Length: 283
Length: 268
Image (cartoon, rainbow over the protein chains, first blue to last red):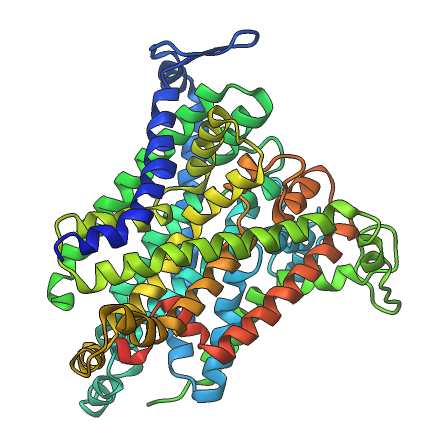
């Protein structure tokens, strides 16, 4: 009976060991290999690729852009997604389910199709977004969205928004509406209720949503590739280029491994901080 | 509970417009009668939907995605059920590590997975083949399949199984007649969620799909990189229509919230 659980997990375990762990280790090994235009991949152990990435300011620029975009997307998603989750949570039954479907549904629609929608909306200086913003007098001159960081941030915020709404929504499910009513009965204004009652209880959701959105934004591929075009690179599109256009696999693998390590560090540290801060709430 | 005020409702309306705008725009442009990108107002046409028929690579990519999604999700679910039963009801050394390993594809950027698979499959000689795609997709959809299977395995009432045993059922009969039927709802929704994720996956697949095995999102992505024309909007509109139909069906059957959050209100 002791071997039973091992027998049950064995098939999946074997598959994951063979198809996940081995290739990942091989990718790390690949970063130490040499590469030449004519000789291809040379299985030696050198630090050339790491030196190249760590010495060249171009790579710092690309990684800087990647994390700047990810941070902006996270802030946008939190600022606009959290209130929406709160509003959804206060809706009555049939509407609530309907609008939850409308808000979360896009998550399951092809990211290529959603990004194509933004490319159409941005579409040069005469795009619908610029026309709309100018007609309501919010801006006087068209903002370039296509092939810019601004465009990437807006499109990614849309693509990842459902994750934030979902995380905050899950946190708000634990909120007892009677506490809000009690605060109001005790004379608290709507602003105080929001600041002292709702926000503290929604905070774990906002933070865990922020971690998800940040890591997905920093590793996003299709959206930055379509909106950024061929020139404005982020880490993932740079790695893609090295792999499928330049064919310098060791260099591309180095970029990808750096992205993986930095992201894993950020996510683990952030998770620790959130858990420690809210240990009392969860415990 | 207090109700949403007018400001909240206005905000909500703007938010919904923001969420739906790009999706609506794609479908709108797909009906243009012109040969270039435009927003049709007075004249609508289905010409770009008919045009899809002249591009067999989109049609074959669609079938490719469909078969790939169905097959890899089925295998992922098949691996998830025993794993979920072990993780949900046994305490054994390495249990947490196994669960973390099966969930790890959610943590690893898909770009890194794509690169790792490309290198590995090329060395194995299955680069660009359907076999490679299936293996990679099983891994990527496994977390979705496992999470919902795990939820239903953890929610099982052991008393029912004990009752069956006390009535003389063998271990095999209990598994076949009691345990498996009870986890079927979780397994079915796990398969559906896995299928949708496989069907939409582009980042990892773009690395390992060969010219003959490109899935629909990969074809769309590569096409868009070269040029954006009404053809790709009509293809996208079809994909959106199919996904929305699937979503509505899933929502009716299980509830989208339960599917995405992974548990119902009663779960906590």
